[in-house]
Image (tube, rainbow, N blue to C red; front, side):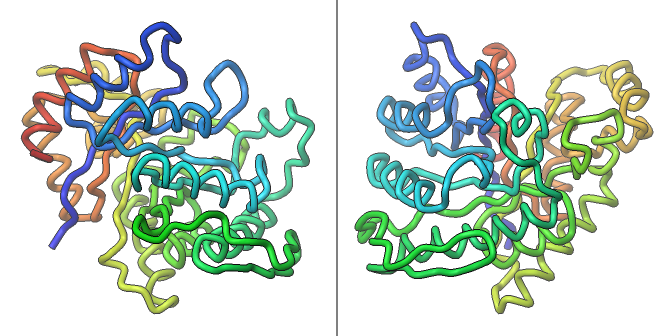
Length: 315
């Protein structure tokens, strides 16, 4: 059986005067989750913002899409996530990745190590974090982190641990996600440390199916049932229109895809409401992707998408 559809909204920041009303409206429209990215600049800090959003809502789940492992020590991640999970009544989805945006590292004076090192650091961090959620004391010694008899992050009995969401685009990271994650975000690779014109082409339907396979391999190798994993995608462009041909042609030209590939790419949700619904149902059947996140900021689009896509598919 496929996982039920879920829908989320990603926001970088909200108007300080109306943010509480804004997130309550997202909740009332039927979206399941609000996500914040984890980058520097004028966007809001995810940990602080998510705590506020959880306090202002009743049902809405909250998470980062995704935390960068290099911006905080895993002990800090473990404590912050456990606290947020308790304060929200079990509504925190802990999203984390190996980091990719080079400008963040340069601006903050952080070393931008090659991807293999960052992925190794992520796997060590996950071992520390999950142990601190589950055990009274944690000792760990690896190539990147050492902790000795660190106390449990918080007492999580009754709420369970936060669900782990790992986002990635390459085989090593996605196999790691298969070993550790409850939810896996299927992303394009960004080995250049930035989004380029070639980035979307790594999310053609053929590439997405290959990436899903890497996740399932990792889960099977770890003795996990890959069918229990939820698959997540983030849409860069969402447009409900009866004539998407012009937009698809422009996206094809800028991405190196064909218009037909654009129509089936998870990064782009374009077409009539019926076409989008049918495509999402077909995509779920073919890949398992059930957890769709769109960009916030356009209130009219959020309302229409909720009415014509979220309601019919997620109930």
